[in-house]
Length: 270
Image (cartoon, rainbow, N blue to C red):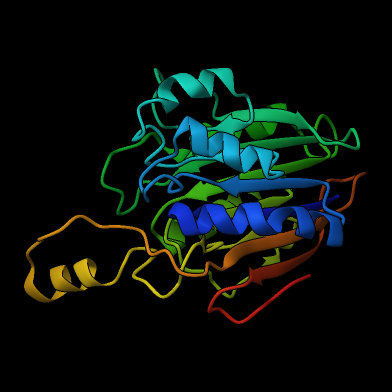
C-alpha cells in the first residue's frame, strides 16, 4: 500500500492547503489511503463538523483528533454520525466516537487506524497509552485482519513518542507523532518493520509560532501577560507529513519518506 499521513491541520490556511492540493497528490503518488490529523482545523482549536466534512470531501480517508477533540462542541454529536473520524483511544471511557477503527481502502485492503494520547507534559491526565493500545494491536494482527496498521501518537514528549514506536515495532505499519506542529528529521523503518516519525509537523503557515499569528505569542513570552486571543496565521501553508509504502502480505513498511509541500519549508516528496 501507499499511505500518506499529514500532520495537524492548522486553521483556514491548513484547510486550504488540503482542499487545493490533496487530490493532485493522491493522483501523482498513486495513494491508497490518506490519514490527516484535523484537531486544530477550526480556528486552531478543535474541529467542527462542517470543517471535517470539507476535509473528507477533499479526499481524506480518515481524520484523527487529539487533546482538543471536543473543543468544538458540535463534534460531540458529529463524530457519532461520521465513522471516518477517530478520537483518542484513551481520552475518556465516556467520550463519543471510537479510538480505533478498521477501514476498507478503495482497492479493498483493510487498514486499522488508532490514535492515543501521551501523558508527559500534557495539561490533562489521560489513561496509560501503552496499555490502551495493546489490546487493539492484539486483536488486529499486522498482515492478518489488517493489511496496514497506523498509530497516531499525539503528545508533547519526543521520548514518549519514540518509546511508543518501539513498543509497536513489528505490530504496526506506521507510528507517527502529532501535536507539536514541528516536523522532525528522524523518519526511519524500525528493526521490526514499523515506519516511524517522531512528529509529522503541521499543515499550516510556518511564518508563525506553531501556526498562530506571531504577535500575541511573542508578547506573552516577552511580558508574561496575555492581551489578545491567539489567531491562526493565514499565509501560504506547508503540507507536512510522511509517506509510507507497505508490504501487503506482512503489513510491514518497505519505505518511508518525509513530505513537505508548498509554503516556507524546504520541499520533500516520495
